[in-house]
Length: 133
Image (cartoon, rainbow, N blue to C red; front, side):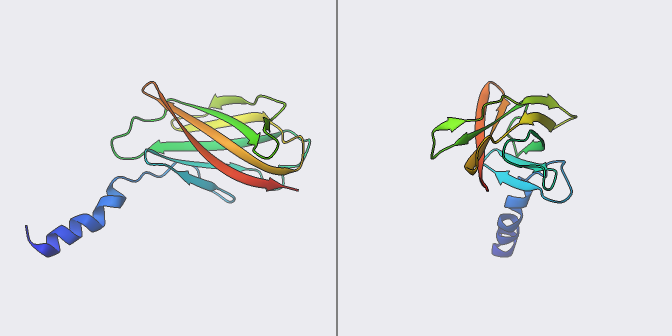
């Protein structure tokens, strides 16, 4: 194999295994692991201390990984070692999309959103930290 051809293949390899979650628009946060890409958003200005909010999420599998079958969403305050006081209801909203209602950050501070993607009997967690004043 000639060197230019090999370099071309190496250059295409990362894109060949990527995926693009079906979630568009403003305020989309994108998380990535070795097996999955997850995107989520909330309505701008919707996340306030002591108020319920809704979150939309979408995920896809990178080259060869099984497609996500379900998604669990939770939040945790690492500094205080506790989670939310409410369990959100997560419902499928089409292929690779979910909607979580009933999330609430009951106090200000740093929160860690936890997204548990399940597929083929295995679960993979993606996290995102956010600061709520």
